[in-house]
Amino acid sequence: MQFGFAFLEAGSVRAKNTTNILIKNILDLYVGALCYWMFGYAFAFGKPGNGFIGAGYFFFSNIPGESLSTFFFHWVFAATATTIVSGAVAERTEFISYLFYSVGLTGIIYPIVSHWAWSDEGWLANGPNVSYRDFAGSGVVHMVGGTAALVGAAILGPRIGRFDENGKPQIIQGHTVPLVALGGFILLFGFFAFNGGSQASVSQPGDAFIISNAVVNTILSGASAALVSLSVSRTGFGSGKWSLLTTINGGLAGMVAICAGCDAEFAWGAVVTGILAGFVYHLTTQLVEYARVDDPLDAVAVHLGGGVVGVLTAPFLIYPEGIVFNWDGPSFLIFGWNIVGGITIFLWTAALSTLLFGGLQLTGFLRVSEEIELKGLDIPKHGEPAYPPISYHVGWQSDLYNLPPDDSPGAKGVGKFIFSSYTYTLCQASSHSRY
Image (cartoon, rainbow, N blue to C red; front, side):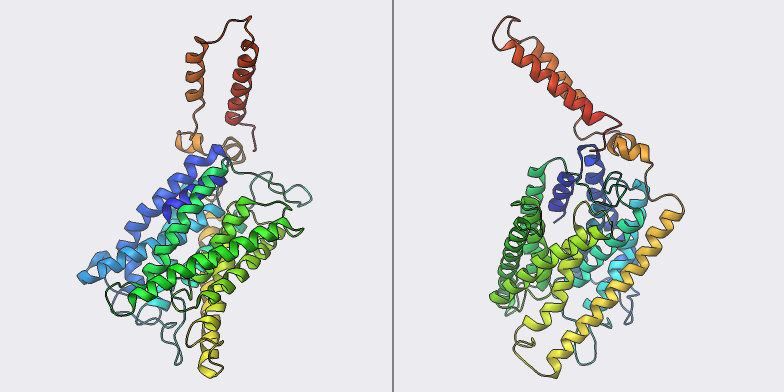
């Protein structure tokens, strides 16, 4: 999953910010591992605890050996929630502020939500004769990440040039579509383990079917959402083109949506979930843009939009207790409890994210200066451009010794190629380039 997010985000930003986004994806794992070891896992699954928060196993103190595999799996979930935010606030965020919100999300906001829903003591897991239904984290992981992304992007403000003086959105394209596609393929594969692995067991009776069902439903929901997104994009409600990027994000939204019920839905239920997710993805994208919130990765639409679809559809489609199969009180109670869970997760994450990002904004640590934003973050902040101009320059110098004679037919064309390539590199490195 982390590999996929890294490539998806790197390709979606401009070349001058590639190193910056990649180091954040790397540190989501490293910072997340230490925070989750120190206190995140304790808040999530530490015992003894209460309905709100865990209170044991800090720094692995007295942790049972069989809990280490649970730590590893949920550390990856925590890192995923944090990575979702890095894409939404890309290209204009101070690196030091990233460290703060990474600790806050991985170590506090996400672990407490996961305690509510997935620990034996959590209040959502122990509702009134019912349990919150979210098998692989449509709400617990993706709504948390998507909500934090929405709040962070809104407080941070749009990138320079994203909206004109009248508020009309302007397109800022990423620098490499193939890298985005590679990230999409890797995420597709990662979702199989993300959803199938949520069974957390492979040796008990019934495990094989649940894992297989989760994996198959994941691809069916993703496929349905991708095709819906592609079709909507071709109409007047989208760009009017057959958009690859929209297809990738729509497919991801479908896989996010099916997380909640992938273990217990029939194949047709996964298709229905994906179709709804595809439409909701487009609707959320337009609402976010209308609100003048700049989200370079469409993270809010994919993860918050898709997560909401999953939380709301699972109580209808899971077998045998879903509303479609049982029109009685307990089935509707699951639906009501999922609504309570979804609203609580949204409000909790939004409140703490507002404190986190708002505090960074007030102290001046949240956003880079206009000059650095225009130059790009790679060189001023990291000193390591992803595509150093010198690497091209050295290549040209060696080629100059093998150019055809000045009077040969190909000489003029070679000269034009060198000049145009050099001009392109200068534009990429220019401090005045916004795009």
